[in-house]
Length: 185
Length: 185
Image (cartoon, rainbow over all chains, first blue to last red; front, side):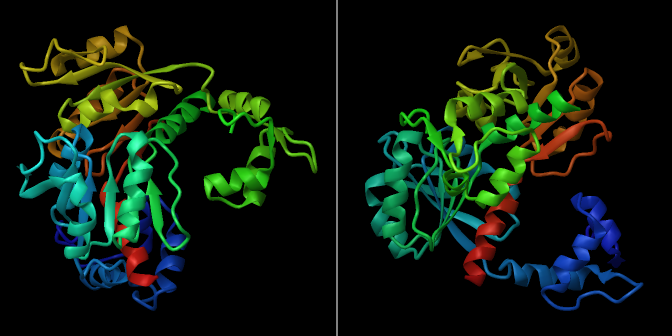
């Protein structure tokens, strides 16, 4: 909305665009403080800044991608990350053909150097784009090196300690959700 | 669990593995009928079959991928789809170098032939893996050709009619969720 030149907006409009109820927009935002003015909505610029603070976007998180196959390469080039909170700064692979190369200004390191590089760069977020059979081993090594949060693209369930956050990007589950919709609509 | 040789399981175990509460497992399943026996849990084989019926996995959905860049190629090779409900059968791209090629037994067609091929193959599910600026145009053409459900990887919000289901795989939002977790833990 800011890009559209708008100054303020209602919770209803936010709900419309995010596909959630306006009551939920108001309830969720109110749990972080009072941002809007009753009957007049939210100042867009102010609200955006507050939300950025809430989700930690005022700091930039540096991220490592492990596995530079087709998916890993797509992630290094993913345009959605470019102006956001997160910046991929390192990638790892075991393929000697890839090690030492640079994709979209991200250097690819030997997977053997995970521990050293993650620690040296003090990274906290890792993205798993390895084959399934290597994913758990890689996750164990990342956690030992100080990684606290993981995005997992390998179609496999990974075990992590309770204090580590992992989000599975389970594409099969998403397609099953579409299949469910088509079966029942 | 079936692969582990297990015969039956409790809602608590399902909840543990799916990272949801056992009460929610029981409540969700009960809305489709009675599958378990109180105090004795679920027969795994039977439950799996029932869930497959519910989500429409007993039929195989044929899918088209639009855009065969790094991401599209990764999708064509994604091992998670291989034994599941959904099979990618067609891909489209505008690059003459790619048109006519076959990746993991999926033929790549000229994007100009979307309407003809989608209709001919009676496809209902499409995956958007194009650059953001082409995504809306591609979606419009897919819907005109009979596509009813979409998985969108382009980091852009797409408009679709109310009777079309679209799921955004918003990687930036997922990373922001991790950043939020790290900021507030």
